[in-house]
Image (cartoon, rainbow, N blue to C red):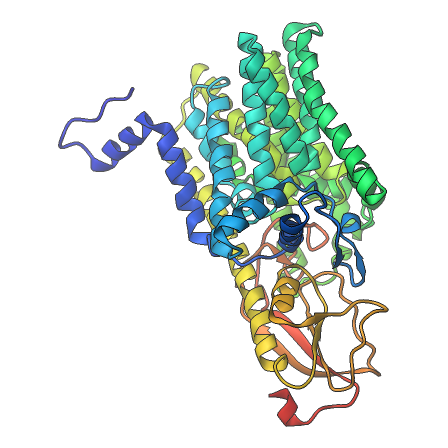
Length: 569
């Protein structure tokens, strides 16, 4: 245990010394300090799907997807819409039954998976490096982790199950401990029932064990726990809905992959960009992880690939004009973060090449497998798919710095701390930008309803995500193909920064007013105008982007005849 400094020494050093002696408490406080300011974040993006499923579970606990939802402009069964398993919704349903459905209550309980994921990273890192605190902090202070942990979606919960499954498996293999291996099998099953990507733990841990022991042993039997669980889930959903939801999710990813129509090279560049941006701390620490010659090589590689893609024009051309930015600024950001992404992948490969043991192979398969899935097997590149590699990258950073020190490489700690602080500050700014976006979306729904939903006309709307959630909660009606029957004089609200929008027929709807709501300002996570597509690269080739982010805009139309001015008030 680190002893406190004598009285009279620098108080900051005394505080740091105290925290070093209590790393778990320090990490819990760090997680809370980073996430509690966003605890009242409004629901947005895909969160309504999880909330609606949770409400269904409270009344029909064995039928989580047995209801209809309008998510693509037409009413369809929930089991056709959702591509995630229901465990996160069960968690929400249990919590909501006790604490209610408020944003504050539900975000508060989702702090637990975030804390568990960081503590799990620290514990796993103790087996891989001598600086587990650095590994845990490098995981925590990333845009991917912080933003995902401020949502009610399944990603951070899955990561918590994932990291503890790895912890128990590594410790179980080291000590030949039945209970830890069995516990890991249970956690693998829970991870897969939270997000299907959790299935990847089976081949990952199997490869780690085989490389370490050079043979197939009794440890393979513990994989029967998640395999049997997934077979049961597939059979149960097949019986209830007429189609197994596990295989349906795989079919969806296969059929929609590449739907955006850009080349594999461009998709790979976008995935590198998301990797470097979502794990920004690793990008800012790259000068301390590599020699200048290697960094120059990474930069040359990325610039050559990016230049060829940019000259071809098919990549950025798919996104249209960046009204709040410029193609040049977007390209610079792509290149910068893609260099960071290349550094991260090279970090994993270099560690495996130099050490050539089971642990280094676990890390490289973890990182490269996640990257390949996010780039080429998932339906679209997004930050949530990059998140699972964050703990492995944090551990690789710590291992790389330790190896450099053992080799006699001198590192100026003050400079490294500054770069880490810059990366952490950026992660917090990105999280704040996403928070402001969600807040603005809720405000736009409330003010649109206040202005046009309380008269004698019906207020209809298009769009989904948080706008749909709050508009429906207030009483507005979602437009659905073939089933909606708006009347002349009704209003139609369309939020421009949203998905699955269908412009109304100009013969049946007349523009009435454009409502503007100031959002994030100069940094965005979801904005086509600046190229930001944190949740889906359909919105932009960057996970977050700097530029002039335009206000959130809601266009209000009047249907049929134009109402009098008094009706619009």
